[in-house]
Figure 1: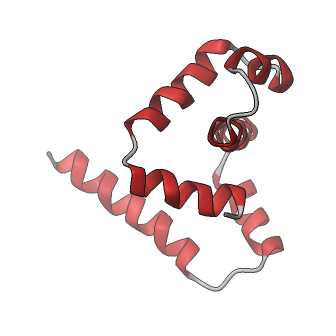
Figure 2: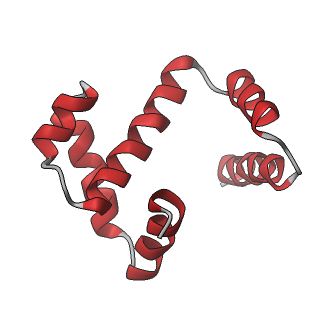
Length: 99
């Protein structure tokens, strides 16, 4: 239970870092310091997966080939998207697709 409280506290601190007024260069530096190259790549792939799936113009297999990632990675993103409420999907569309 105490570990969960620490995770929540750490996550809240992470969110607060973004709540500050940062320019793109500062955020890029922050991510470079906080995240490994692999973590940044995974986040980039997740953004690409979600964007493409929301657009609906590309099959999961084509997306996997284009990003050079496993179909399982695309499927995890797809399953995550399926779990979201319509409100959360609309939120993502606004953020990722400029709708």
